[in-house]
Image (cartoon, rainbow, N blue to C red; front, side, top):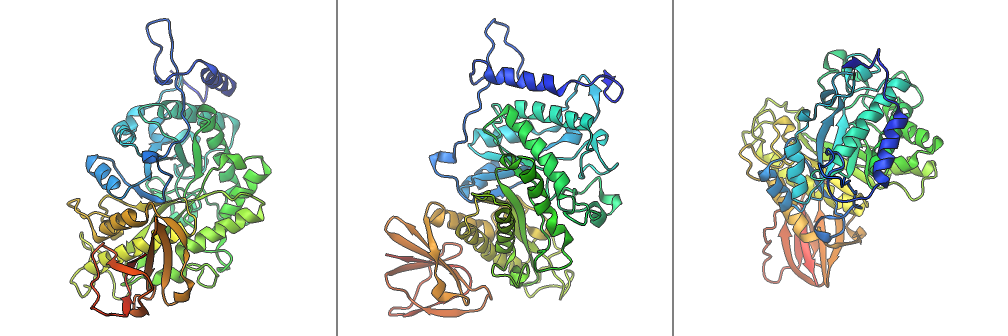
Length: 501
């Protein structure tokens, strides 16, 4: 082996010629990344166009997991998951050393997880992150920017080419690729002792007073996408989901909020907009004994709330740069976090539970089920292409998961099941503005039936007249709501489904 820092590098041109030659060769469904067969006939991979699961149109329903096994496959099927985000690839783990010829440690990838998902018909949104030591612009920061020199960029392209050749092909069939995770976070805000261990990206540059490092990230996003697509033209690429911890229009101190504009500016000025197929961000609300924090993001804007505030901000930036049609939106992480300030996390709630316990307090679990309905209905109404709940599997961290430690379903999972079964294949009609702002209310149709989904954002009881055509009512968990004979009103607080003819 020769250390590439002192030896001759493989020319990127040769890599490109290899890829083009394979793409132009006779195609079949055997593995491009595999060794030639012993007989004279050599077969190659064809990358089929994107198809949707079970022959239906792409749906908004999605999850993220920290591992993949048959139990989670079954649970994901139970909510008709289309999008499945998975932190699949670490460049640092796969290519820890810069040597010639290239040596890739594919054993660092859990291939079984990826094949299990693919064999069950799921599309993985594969996250690629973490630069090895030799490629880091800032020593000791794998989450941060890649060194911006020709030699390191060539190494990055070589790695991505090998990665795409191997994992675009059967049995993995990866089509959706995400470059990093929350890249708009800055190293300064994290603190050096955590640089090597944090799970998110840290391309944010607090010293860049214009775009917080977004232009530099945009450059590497374009390299990432164009390299992946040179292997598989049918691949779809999204940016690392933006944390967007503040709104620069409504928060004068929100310098990190300019990161996305910097990314779009670079792509726009460098003929790179085709490199970005989806724009992604993350959407969380903190639970302090209720869901009142939901409206705090961009509270003064016409589109308040975490989900809508962020999606409309990103769309405004795209519109300002003349992007038409706008890039579709993915929420690659979304959920509710169990947190307490007053009383603190170490003080018991009325149920006797605490956010700091291994099991969530029942008050939180009930509100988590509410919030799941809020998020998915709003996402559908806002024409968001996919929302991946963080996480499907059990998580002691802030109790964000949809399952308990014994893998039994939390109320939020049951609410997800019922929502998916009722409106997952329904047509969205519009908002029922006659109830606004007291209630959030949305109408769907399925065949000749109308379905209304309503809830009270203040989590208080509000009575409305039973609408014409009323047939039945169900709560967020799919339990029938029995009204008294001759009743003319129904009380709305937690999400309710009304079925009308």
